[in-house]
Image (cartoon, rainbow, N blue to C red):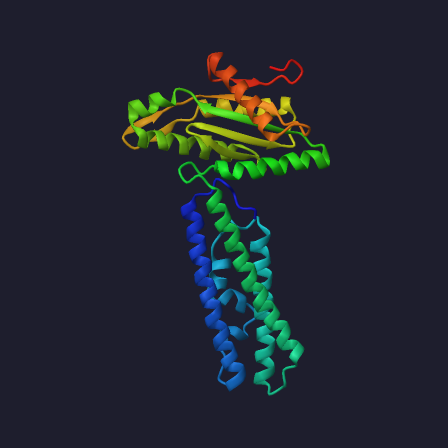
Length: 301
């Protein structure tokens, strides 16, 4: 895709089960097709139609409903292309067999290559989804801290190669302990989930939110200079403060958050940028909270 990091693990697991069912249907379909080719039994009428790839069970799942979590990724597009071509070549084989014409080895190989590639692409998508599940913080939907290290190293390497800027931002939900003490920990969990869900929709597609620990989160903002990052984060701060968060046993509450920004430096370890963003966060909290503080590289603070 790559798949969205904020996507819920339950949604991802549902997709995995649907893909498993699709592969089982694919195996059953191949068995019936080969039986028709070898024994001369009548093929399924659906396999002779021009839209056969839409008629099979996998096709009904693939084309019959939207898949917003998958459609932007290369795995999903490749699966559709291989699946359609596989049915196209299968139809050509069946038409020849019904007409009593011999099937050339190259024609059969062409069909089987598509069938094999289709299965490999589905398995590749499943592997990608499993990796995403392992990278997601299941409570909030943010990427977890284990995946943060690798992502930030990737961005650091990209800075070295392309001299593109990247900013990190530490966010801490203000007075979160009071939320837990007043409304309970279940309500606190709902607040964390709602905040991450809201922010993830408001951020750019290539930005990433990681759960750093507790009510602290780290944002990675690639291709972004410090002043631009400040404007982006300050907008997020304002919009988050205006967000009514509904709780099951209460009407709604409002929260604020403090933010600390720092630019990554290609000549310094990633950990240095995280520490600077954390220091900037402390400045935001000590300055009254509900604000954004930017680490000044020139002044060193």
